[in-house]
Image (tube, rainbow, N blue to C red; front, side, top):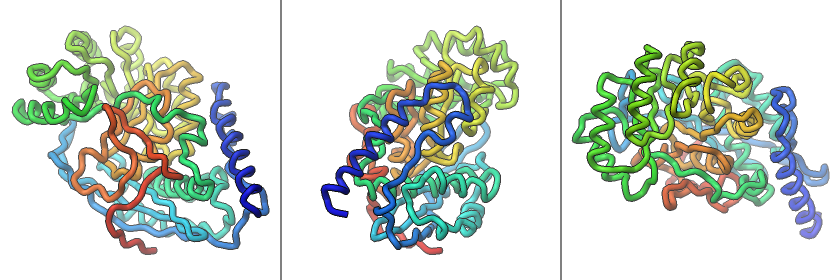
Length: 394
């Protein structure tokens, strides 16, 4: 194919996918399954085969991270890459304890992924459907393949994904910066470190000293706050009293206030809450959204829980069609997964994409913090490059 024909194909692809991404308006899960089809004209097919490989990697946190229930100083991840026709796409599975996945389980899953039956990496819907069918759960492992596949396809097309979605990469909410449960001294120290770089802070609550934590932060800053209870509140009326107090402290939203399966109590809390209530642990995938309408004000989408970008963009658009607020969240991740998320959170209401900023050994360069927002790179794909040598194997 000559360069003129290739450019026509590329322009047609970008236009058609942008239209498809904007077309999610019917609030039915079934209608979302095949709205974005990534493919080229048959003459673009290569004789190359996709090669998937991986490497375990341990993220080192800058500070001990404590939430309701546990503390940690590291987060294990598995990095992936898919090679095809001289191009490489990168992906990531981040594995915080509550996901129930490990580096060993991810690698065991990846060993079962056989991409040899697919001749075109841009057939994303078809490929991720196959990956999803290999086993139940394993969502972070699946996300690592999905992200690498999107990165590869974007490099084939020579465009970042936000452009193919038809998004403005600057039309994004400020990202929160997370402050874990800690002593007053440490909380104030973390707050002062973040104050000049962020426009909103996220505070982990759900413990016995929530008011102490908030008061410590308020002693040094008046930035707006969001709070994440990580299911830590168990009494609905006490939770409501706390939310009213939090509103007086310029808190703007509450994430997962009560146990994930106590949907009746959460729905009753949401109904009278002066602040929007967002689902995190109660939400995993696209099929969960419709049953949570009326229970929560909004949803927090995380690539590691929903199997990656292919499903995340559908979740974004379905929630909006249902009149729910939408947040883009993350685990502790490298700039690989954060950059993938940055491609699709345009137009959302809230964001928590500070995962790579919490670690001291980020092995990718990609999306960057600018004026309190995580801004996607203009490089093709998800917009990342490794900043150190990584040894992948199969």
